[in-house]
Image (cartoon, rainbow, N blue to C red):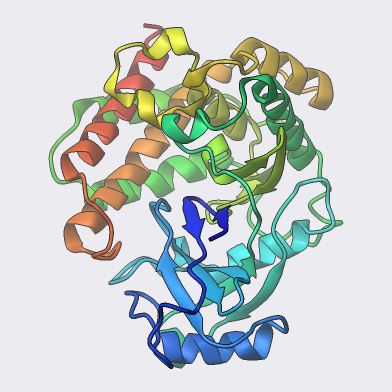
Length: 365
């Protein structure tokens, strides 16, 4: 058995133990139709394809597709059930990855986009499988050698600088979205989602929204914004970041939103000791450059002022709470698939934690 990583450990099973001609039944994938589509779009595909849902991916669903000789590919599709199509636009995500393929930002190569609902009930696209670790939690982070962690951290901030200095027009993304009033648009969008998905009141969410609206800094320039830029959305191997994943929230706007979001997720061991949330912050294992060094490198590379980065960190916590509430509600309704192990209480506690962190930053606590 060979082992590879694409968000979780992937063990290639080989064909010996399968029923002849059988196709695995995996929720969210019409194996017969999708296999036929893959055969037309992936020249290297050999024989029968086995599908498995990759652990992780709190919004769009990600599947591993493995053929009979161990070739592995990755399929992305929207969540199951009734969802906002604008929030799960596969063609948009596919377009962004294609546009960045020749840039300094490492992304997987695409094999194709399917927009025919007769194939799988929803749009999907298929991209290359890239070997490495997705460092999305404390346990996986421990697998990154200690002497490689600083190198990984420096590469992360280098890639963010590269993304924010990429010419959006030159790569064909200049019309991806409105460039101006990013924070105002984001506050409106996620307030709408919060109001549509909230179940129990969270006072910190309401108060944070009020303060964020009243103290919004002026946007200086616009860049491509990833929207979810963190170690958990990257494939890491041998001290390098081989690919940046999960571009579903990408748009144009204020780059400091990405910086604030990254810094929120860049937690040092001393900050989280004894906290149950430690597991979601991979940098807690230690060995990475600290926030101050990341901020210094970013300022030197891009020339951008981080004086108001506390606001952007608060905004990112608040936005993530709104996103998390939408995910929480979809879990309640079964839209993320029955194969997932659900921790509903933990997901709600995470929403509360983010809202309270946002308010603490805004109030200077």
